[in-house]
Length: 108
Ligand SMILES: [Zn+2]
Image (cartoon, rainbow, N blue to C red):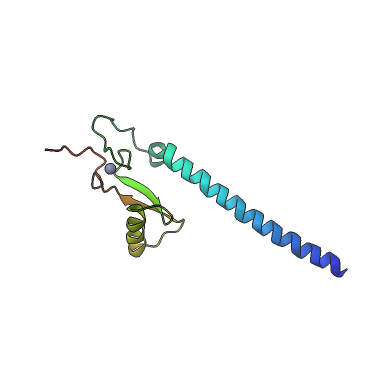
C-alpha cells in the first residue's frame, strides 16, 4: 500500500515534468511562428523589399524579443519590461534600425 502511494507520487512528478517539457516545446513553436509568419500573425501586408527596413524588424518596425536574447535586444527587452511586465515572456520592441517605422532610412 505504501509502495502504491510512492508510485503514484512519482508518476505525478513525472507528469508535471512532462508538462514543463511540453510547454517549452510549445514556446519553441511560438518562436518559429513569430519568425516565419509574422506578417500573417499581425494581419499586415508583406512589405516591399525595396523600401523595407534592412534591420531585424523585417519591415514591421517592431522586433519580438525575450530576456534570453543577446544585446541590444536584451536591453530593449528590459526597458519594455520596466514599462509594462510581459505576460508570456515576449516584448515587441521598437526596431533600432528604422526607429519603428519599418522603412529603409535613406542615407542622405
Ligand atoms: Zn526596422
